[in-house]
Image 1: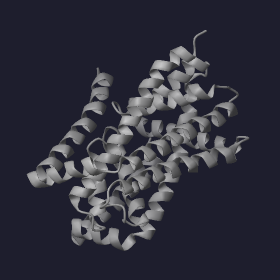
Image 2 (image 1 turned 180 degrees about the vertical axis):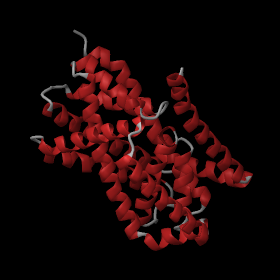
Image 3 (image 1 turned 30 degrees about the vertical axis):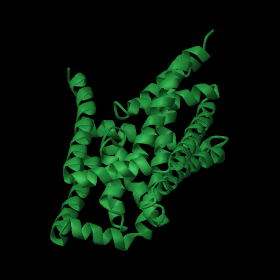
Length: 319
């Protein structure tokens, strides 16, 4: 019963948040502004939208190719087309239930390549650790390049006194967590320690694999394709085509963070991207149109590739 409730909450809460953000954003615009947004969609240069989709597809391919290195390291073999379709299915599933795609990806490999579920899932977790570390590099670069702008934005949004209180509370909570982590025997903490040790083991196994440099190359290429996909889309709208690359990096970072807030960024992605672009002189209506162009096109690609993958997996693996 608890698992069922938890499962439904994991679906409904992000979905409800996304809907709430869409309603909030819709109500914040006047009728004239909504017409402007529709106009941006109508007059957008869709060549750059399609170009961004092609770049995103290369990211999918690279992720599928990278996966074979960790699978081979464990002593298993898998066909590239099955890896690719499993990756596409993973993104498709994440549209409905956050993080469910990783489980689906491991299940597909177990079914069609006979790779044990726990082994396949372990390789996926190891990949996620690497992806998280690379994303942190983007975050650090973005904040270093645009520190003054982000500092002013934070201080304007949150008064200094409240920010100071939040900082003190955050430090106190962090210290409390460290003490609990070290000295507590709570079952939940012990489970977290076990999971963390597994993540560390998965990470160190990457450093021991024979083709670790090829793995790392594809890891950076995947994130480069994500950034490039986001970047080329700015040329779809005349109003965003002159925005600086530094602004693109900040928008990309916050857009990526938004994906974790709701089901693949539903509702949250356009809101956060629009708010970031406002800092660089782009109107809220233009930023919103841009955010929805990126999110809608990428979601359409995910649905297309994911749907085709579920269709062709049994066909390509007939015995």
